[in-house]
Image 1 (cartoon, rainbow, N blue to C red):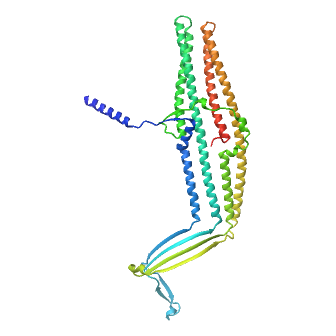
Image 2: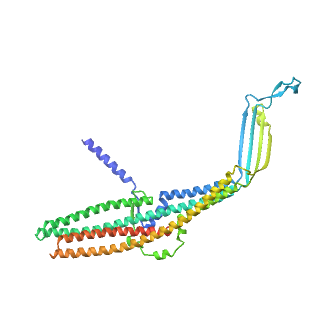
Image 3: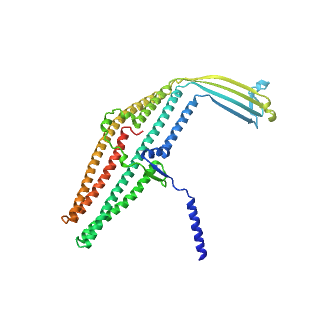
Length: 448
């Protein structure tokens, strides 16, 4: 028994020592702006989009390299185990016609070393490809920007969700505090015979329901913190404290100012992406047209040939050769394939133009919808604030009447329920207004 106790003590000490050596989770205190900046540096989708830009840069260099001299070298070695035999006509040696003389030409060992160079002098597809590769890089950069905007929106909404949950928890704590006082007062009055037991039960039920709601809200708050960390690309085990308060959020109604901006859609990354895609389609059409043009390239080669029947003396004799030249390739007829490819590319360009017009209309509609949602959200929030204040006043009057004996406990219970309902609607209205504000900024291209 003592041995077991000793082992347990040693194990406990080892575990404590191990836990002490573990680094404590990092702690961050972030405003919403700092949370977004953290996401820009750590969010997985943004990191990958940034890598796509680097990949596009290498793609541009790869395409550029096609126009640089292409040099290759080759080395061969051949050991003729059996030297090839050629048949010569027998008449050459005075033999009867129709006979052949077997003759072996060549030597046992052969080796060739050569260097070949090619240089494009004119190629329409290459010139268009250079422009297309740069446009492709631009497309990657704009895709990166779109990913950043999406992360900004998601982080901001998740941040506001946590703030709203904290406000909800604050209201619950205030209601629980005042309701606990009411429970204590009603219980004392019941003991003195001034109120009935059912009055105590009604208030206790409400009090217990509020406690349950608070526990649920705390669990939901913890989950929303994890969601915010996920949107930021932050490890879940890190500690995060929000610096901003709800009072720091600007919910001013500037819809009229936004409505005067008729070219806002050009700030939308979706429109920029569609424009870039249209340019890529136009370059593809141009590339198809260049296939009707000839191509010109220069080439040169130098080769050293070694032949000998003795392997040891193979490289003692060199028979070099070299040449330079031009290659002109002129397309003549390929079954009308190029013509049909050009027509297909023209249709693709027309479709991209139509898509751009449709996207503009869609963005205008989205902005109009965001305007309406924001105005409605602000109005609902203001109404809920007034309803919340009225509910608090009704509860205050109902409690006074009940204490003076001119009101019933049912009125107090109903007033308490009405206040809780008003608080819940206020919280929902607050969240809707904050989210509609984010959507409004996104719709008008304010988030970049």
